Image (tube, rainbow, N blue to C red; front, side, top):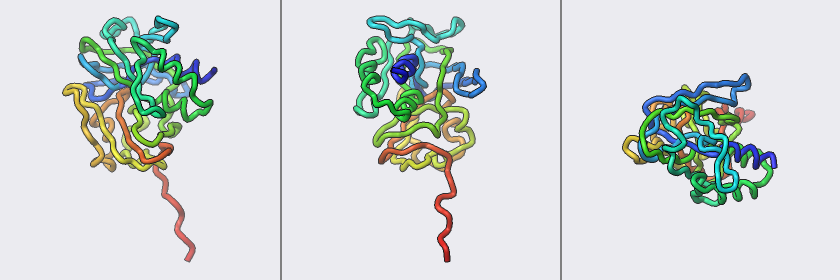
Length: 231
């Protein structure tokens, strides 16, 4: 029940390729944030949060969009999330019933929760502008387990100054893409795995990216590997 409540409290949003972004920590533990993203008219890939609100039956309640946001709830026309275990998209808005059933059936395992809480999601807006909202319980990237295949992730401030190889942990990266929102197309960064700060240079905090891995793994800082063998 706790995992269902926690995940249902984050209905919405994730994308990459914006002009500017702010990801301001609002709690001492570093898990809660005020997010400010430049949204385009069209599809955006951004960090999930209940900007529309929590799905309750046939309606949504408790939107986290702030009163001074240029993008309002009325501008958001669709939200989709990728279900890693089922390898398919499902709607979080305007109808979240399939998503809620999926969450309800998830194993009571922290790796499943962190995967969803750190996920980026597709948001379609009918106009361009600044989206401002609150986001709670953003996991640290080293707390996120990936499943084999595609995983939707979020760029966060703690990734600054690090390459993808620096944060890959135990993962074998097969493909990585950022979403170019201005041109509404994907762009690969697989050839830049050693580029420091690549995610902040090509994207922004709070925006999303996708990564394909060969097997179950956990993100984390690069280590020195195994110690040298004895002579």
